[in-house]
Length: 639
Image: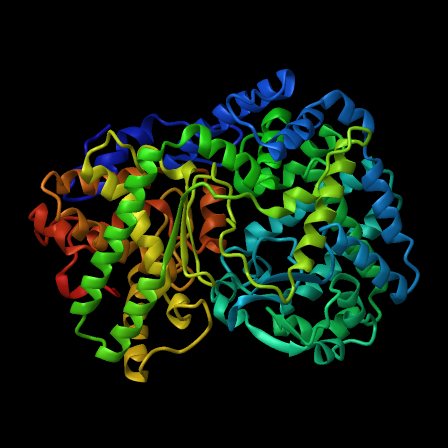
């Protein structure tokens, strides 16, 4: 391969050889730094869980009653022969219940049952932090998902429309076979009614762009007002089924859906029944709640969507399903066994270091008033961090008791019931900010805006992101920039509208917020329309603006922090940044991400952010003729 000059394309310079030699695993749509760590974690945990399910848990290694309970379930889950013998009975019974509905009263009854099992329903209720009183849990009302991954796929003027038509053709083919396998009759009518109802939901749905602006998802309705939006089912009665306390307010995440709900229900009972039946069959089949052959058939639609060559093996699928569902239980085991206290302390120290650097940077900002800077400093000082794994496991797992006499699917449905019941029991209660929303084995990190909290699971705290044995520059360009990225989410276009307590609250002076929006718009323009290599897609600058702001400030903050250390080498830092964004994916998957993901494509994250970073240009003495050069007056810095 032809060697690229670092001055022209630093991403290719650092990753070109890797990109040329690396293959995409047949059971994944991509490969990259995140995926390689994920596969390493997966290999470790699959081996451990298999050994424990055969020999029992060695309590010298790990002694936890909830983990013991999980291993019993895992043993049953991995018995493929028995699961295939159990067949598709649960799916058939649920679908037949749906299709036997004769009126709206019976529809309401089945909706309650589906909600109680955590299964797809036309409406959804959930409990989480009140975005205007983040210390207390509120009740939220949501809308259903579409068949296609995003609203734009239905729009003839949208570049994704052609892909959407191909996906719908595959969906028809896949679902028809699923319906036949579970023994339903008149499948062509059921399918056509499903697609007709899906089209009715489209105009009531949000685009990915609209959904990414989560602050605008806060729309409080009184329960009385919500209930008045349709006469066909009683939303207040459904609420009372799940929430024992008196509910006065419900937060509506999509008012357009609520306002159109009555017309959606009116004279569409048969369409709704078919739509619910298909949603159930597909979701339960693809989730492995039937035979494995049914799961493999259901996965065919997803394979076309992502360009993945083949479905996961039964063993790998089962591991991923259960390690996700029981994330706290599995993750805590992983953290305690594989994540060292020494590493935890160093990462905790880095977090405090970056917060201090952020304070220093905020104090120097000239485009903000003193009053707004002081408010920002208060929010920054209130950020808390959780590193490695949780101090305690979510109490929901205490309420699930594995039943050896029942099938795997019945145990999973029982667990779903426990989860739903527990969630509703939290309504009106104080938010527990010590709980994690991601398993500690997961290769990711997040900022929780309602808690003003950053979380870094043990899963991501590994090379190339972090290693105790890596250079300071590599660690700061890897996990350091990610830590600073997550801190920045407190001040992105969503976080900027939330105060230090996690409440939606305008803490800005008007002229300052206007200046912030102008800088955010410049970031949108920097990325908008950039081509995504390996695909026909282009980057959506508006959809990705929060992540691009976080990347830019994260990179800059981590670099500034690194410069305070004598053993910091800038070249290692820049290489570390490029390495963490190594990414190779199928064309279909790249185009899917461009339509639905709030993150810019990894290539653009690794490349454009360095082009946009003046210290990079200074360090490598870039000239105007170099591909990595952007004129200083064209570079964008929000923070």
